[in-house]
Image (cartoon, rainbow, N blue to C red):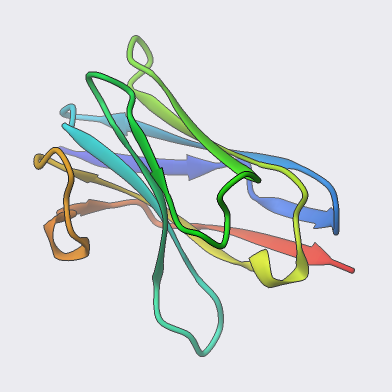
Length: 120
């Protein structure tokens, strides 16, 4: 059974930091991504990482503030969030794909999400 389990969400003040983790079990992926969804809004891309080479890609809204990394031995991907803003408040989801640079619809496995709340 394939599972993606996020952890590390919580509350932070604006300007603070949080690190999210996503542990995958049951298979490995060629790419893993982070997405977020705020109330009343569509789910949006945050960033992604290619599993073998570790290449990363970020949304403009988080570039320079968020960093994605992975631990291949632990089959875990991380999202380090710094300089947090109130607009970063959302439920954060990790997802896995067998494609190397997947589009949104090509992420076939999703975690349950973890809430991040940033207060100003």
